[in-house]
Image (cartoon, rainbow, N blue to C red; front, side):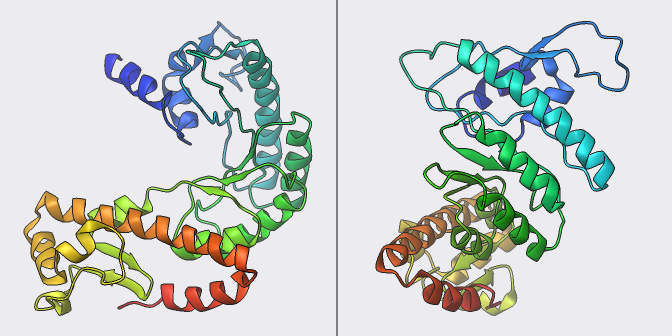
Amino acid sequence: MDFLKSIGKLLDKTICDSYLFMAKKTPSLFGRLYKTTNKDNPLADFVPHTTELLALQLYPRLAEVAPAREYAAKSLGLTERWLDRCFNQYHRTSPKYGHYQALFPIVQGCTYPDLRARAAENVKQYDADGYAIGGLAVGEPTEVMYEMIEVVNAILPEDRPRYLMGVGTPVNILEGIERGVDMFDCVMPTRNGRNGQLFTAEGVINIRNKKWEDDFSPVDPAGTAFVDRLYSKAYLHHLCVCGEMLAAEIASLHNIAFYLRLVGAAREHILAGDFRAWKEGMVEKLTRRL
């Protein structure tokens, strides 16, 4: 429990979409649980009670991902009730250490357009600093994810940031931007990097493949991270197959820098007015396997 409490303190200082798991497993970290006789909903009396608020935080409210429509509708009702409690507590909570805190309600509704639309309309009443889109990129077809983003963003305010949670690949991010998404978070740059996958503007590299064994060109000649030109593909391949931790560090740094470069370029093309044409060319290149 001491370990879980330390994790709870860490989550209070970061943007995170893992509150559902933590709240269900260790609800005392996230609120006060009172005895309840509601066996169907053990979290019915779960009261949000924040005590360690630091800096700018985006608090996802309790949510569930459900495949069946009936269950999805029931879960959405639970989520909406939780959201109301969450905002009531948020408005009663004073900022800590003089830092402003933001609460982004999450739009749920699984892959059902009517539930997504209902959820988007519901969150607008809170006049929040921004809005999150959750419950996507969890196994549904990519085109369905894009459809849900379009449904939601047609309703959410245009003057507030939209945060697509847990997404995604470089292509997902460009497609999300085209559909009005402003913010993203994902483990992919580091998780895939730890497994030898490099994202580049010319395509995807699996640096573990033997084809890179004698390639002494830089990791990414067009990259912006210091590791991109300091190390060669052959050296990074060697580190990967040997299981050296340095390989994961190099690949992670490269991928994070690439993601930042990609969204920076997207912004430039939005301002230039040619984003769509640029995006279509980039998507073709980003999906290549080098």
